[in-house]
Figure 1: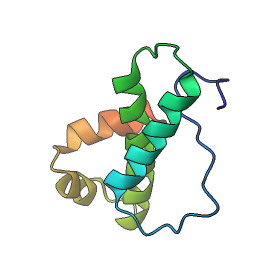
Figure 2: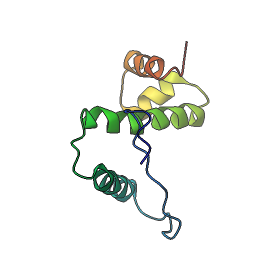
Figure 3: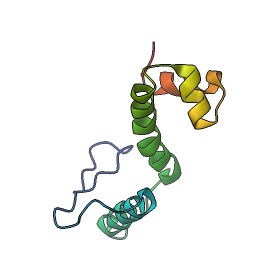
Length: 95
């Protein structure tokens, strides 16, 4: 596992497994591998790390999908536009 950045869970992709599973299955598999690689060490702030790992690509891809329209993105996410803007700023996706 790559432990250079404590806010990144790095898992080697499985070459032998087809990518047909659900998002839930994919996350479960990644977390199982992560816990195995900890080798008994206790993780810290894991909840926030996992949320960041999912939230950033979600926002990046959704903003691309809606052509940068924050109102549409907020509606898709079920957030108000102000909350979305705050999250986009967190990940440096807007100035």
